[in-house]
Image (tube, rainbow, N blue to C red; front, top):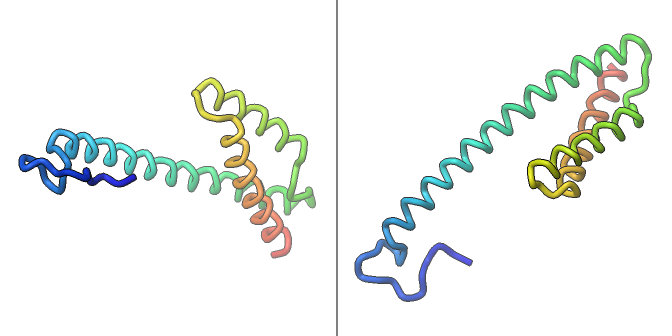
Length: 111
């Protein structure tokens, strides 16, 4: 689906009524702000996990912690359900992050 109507009204721009265009713009600006916040929060999370990786490497601990990962997934699924976000999606997202964290921890341990 596109933003363009099939029969543009003479009082619209590109077939989109001005009030609709204004609302789309406002919603998209909110989405952009949320995306920026997500990126910054992920950056902070990875800074913390890098510190964990260095600590694990110093003490010869394994890069992965399956029990911690299971607990985190269960916790995130609960948070997601409470926030009306699909817990399956939330778990997939966290699994992606966990895999990246483990990759970083392995690299730190090799260094």
